[in-house]
Amino acid sequence: MRDRDRLKKYWEKVIRQNMTHLRLTKDMTLDRRVWRLFTASLVSCYVFYIVFLFFVLGFLVLELRIFWKQPLYFHEVVVRPLHTLFMAGGVCFQTNVHTVSQTSPSPGISLIHNFPHEAEISSVSSTDSSSGPSNYSRNVQVAFGPLNDVHIPTRLMENFLEIASDNTKKDIETCGVLGAIIKDDTFYTTSLIIPKQESTSNSCQALQEEEMFAILHGQSLFPIGWIHTHPSQTCFMSSIDLHTQYSYQVMVPEAIAIVMAPTDTSRAYGIFRLSDGGRKILKDCPEKGFHLHKEPVDGSPLYGDCSNVYINSCLRLEIFDLR
Image (cartoon, rainbow, N blue to C red; front, side, top):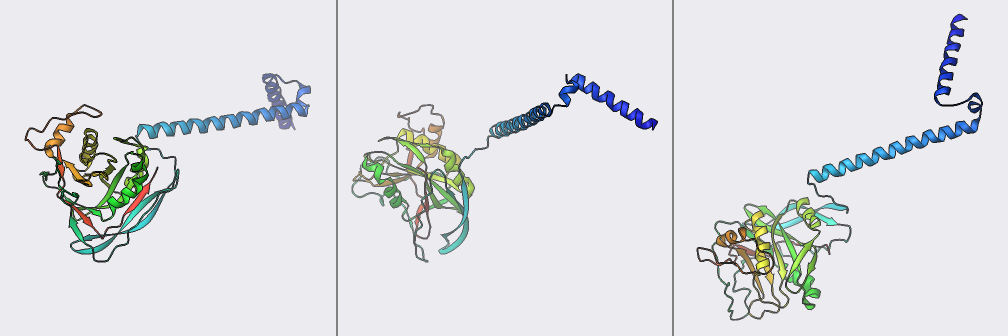
C-alpha cells in the first residue's frame, strides 16, 4: 500500500509539472475539444517534418547527380533485343544488339531492311557519287593513316533523303548521327538517329543531344559519324562542317561525314574525313561560324574522300526520328 501511494503521488507530481509546462489548467485537461486540438496540432507537425525531410533528401540526390555529371532523362527509355545481321569474311553472321526506343516525347520510327542471305559488299569511291564531269577540288583520295574499315547499309543514304525530303523542299538542312558496332576490327553501321534540331539553309544544330547519346550508350554503339544535307548547295564540307567532323574524329578516328547534295548535278553525295594535317589545323582553330582555314603545312587538303568505306547489303538499319 505504501508503494502504491508513493507511485500515485509521484505520477501526480509529474502530471502537474507537465500541465504547468504546457500551461494547461485542470479544467482544460477535462475538455475533450482541447485534446482534439492538441492532437491535430501534433499530427500536423509530424506531417510537416516528414514532407520537409523528403524534400531535403530529393534535393540532395539531385545535387549529387549533377556533381557526378550523370545525365538526367525525364522520358521513358525502353530496351528491347534486336537481331542484327552483318557480313564478315564473306559470310553473314548474326549478333544480338540492344536497341533503345524513345517512348517519350515521341516514338522512334524504325525502318529495317530486307536483304538476301548472300550479301554484296562494294567499296565507295568518289567516282561512284559523281554523275558527270566534276570540277570539285576535293575530289581526291587522302592518306589518313591506318584505320579500320567502315561498312554502311545499302539504303542508308536513300532512306535519309526520304526523311529529309520535307526540309529539302523548304531549303532547310537536316542532320543525323550514325551508330555502329565493331567486330573483327570492322565498324558495322546499324543505326541512324535523327535528333531534334535547329536548321537553316546552310546550317544544322542538334538539340537535346542527351536523347541521342542515350541510344548510343544504351546499346554500346560507336558514334561512327554523321550525315547531313546541302539542299541547295554543292557537295563539300563548310568550315562549320569541318569543326563538327573534328569532334567526331576525336572520339572515333574512323568517323565519317556524309554530305547529301540532291541539287548538285556533278556530285550527289560525298563521304569525307579530315586528313591528318586537317585535324591539326582544326585542333588549333578558335574561330566559330563560317570562316577560312589555312592549308596544312604538308600541302595536303583539309579533308578528302574516304577509301575504307564499304556498302554492305547484308546490314540491317534502324532509324530513330526523335524530332
